[in-house]
Length: 104
Image 1 (cartoon, one colour):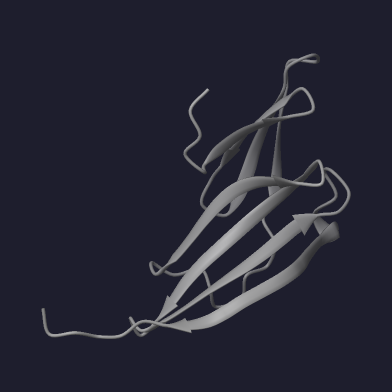
Image 2 (cartoon, helix red, strand yellow; image 1 turned 135 degrees about the vertical axis):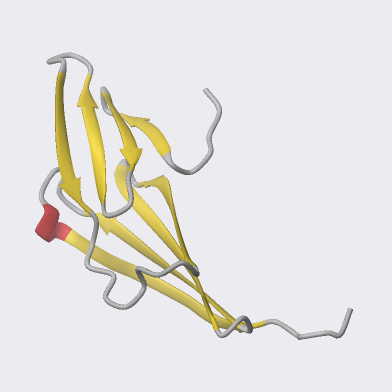
């Protein structure tokens, strides 16, 4: 199955990344459910990209954001307890990384 960062299969459930939430389909029970993403505060703008991953058999979201076109940072969030929206935990922040602006 191709991976594009917006969908994944984990523990019998297929997940799709929506704008502010996750849509999950439990294959064995044939049931859909919605789960909220972590509170990203001011990182919900057009310069922010989110992608799905699995970290230690848990849902992980990598948030990639750019500030004023020159700073780039990554936050990795993990849902510590599956389906419990309050269990989202920011594991690590990488950056800011600076990009050199050129006149090309």
